[in-house]
Length: 555
Image (cartoon, rainbow, N blue to C red; front, side, top):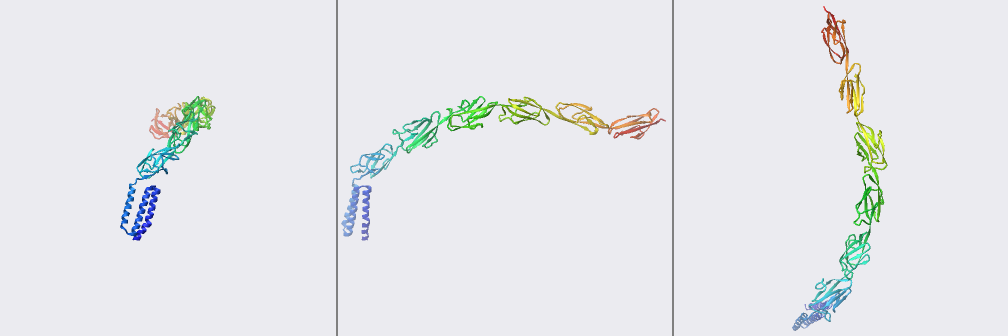
């Protein structure tokens, strides 16, 4: 056990003494404390070694006295501390650094030490082109001046921030306003009196273009396509502002100042309209739409780059002068209808135009169109009248003025004439197509063995000759009746009479024959188509008939 304790003292205590004393001298920089610790711990080591050798109890008493004396010396001494700023020990009233100086109040004692509890005021004075930023290790790191309470060795760090300048289009910004040939720039806030900004300052730049120019863009800002824009001053800034020239547009002899330009033969709509200054931004794309006045048509542009198109577009990269050409155009009016397509329907038929009018319903001056008339069912083409006079169905019309043309179609009706029975006779006309109002005369003539028996259908008459007007389609029938001949003879001649005495009778007629004897005779009997001795007999006329009435002398 004794040997173990001796080894502990030898191999542990001595390195402990060396380590503690080195730390106090070189890290804490407290010389007095280092001496007290060195003397105290060395005395403890010596007394312990002597006690193990001599075994004297009074050595332990001395050990206790040494320990308490060392501890008392530490607590009863008046401690002193050092102050360093950015690794420089404070030895006077100021510390000079590359970015500025620090004023120190009060200065330390001649030895560079401060008494414990001393409150030291530090004031930062940045050099030109720098700003005070902050402290590290003070009582209030964001304040300037600040304080440090010396209750131990203090290591303070001061931070300076660089100040930065701004250049716009090769002009150093020293105020709130810059003027250029094309416009001006407002700077908010302006730089400080030294023409520089503190690190991190947010600066707003507002461009205002002069008349005839537009703001175009920035370079070197946080938002180069925005106006106003901002610049964050964390380095020296070189900003460029670009302006572009504005251009005018003239149509005909009129400067475009609004969305519509009115001309003698029409108008032009401009999209977009120019700005309030009557000009366009460079590169603006403008659409021109020509609207001809009534009686005119658009023909072409000049100076647009797409002169054959309406609407047309052009890009304004210089002042532009555009021409527009209109032409007189003419209407085709057919039967009081304005022709708007390739055909027109009128009463009685239709008219086809080749070519038809343009999208505006008009023809170009001196254009020639061919009009062709086609009658509807129940009509016939009759003639052209008005600005064209002819009786052929197709006519050529030169469009050298508005044309007012009438096409005449005549209403027609169909007459159908028939026979019943077909072999019963004939009529003067079998029918046909006739203009409205035409007067028609029909005559019916029966064939042998028939008689005319009247008209039926759309005409009802018993006369063989009828006259009527064609005011509708008509169907008429000439009716004939088959007839047979009855021949009556009296035997002997002069002996009497028969009623009827013969004649022509319609098919199927029932004929009653009555025999009347002459004076001195009596009826005896019938011969031929009838028989019997009754004075009155009947027969049906279904063929030609011959009858003989026979009389005898009265007794």
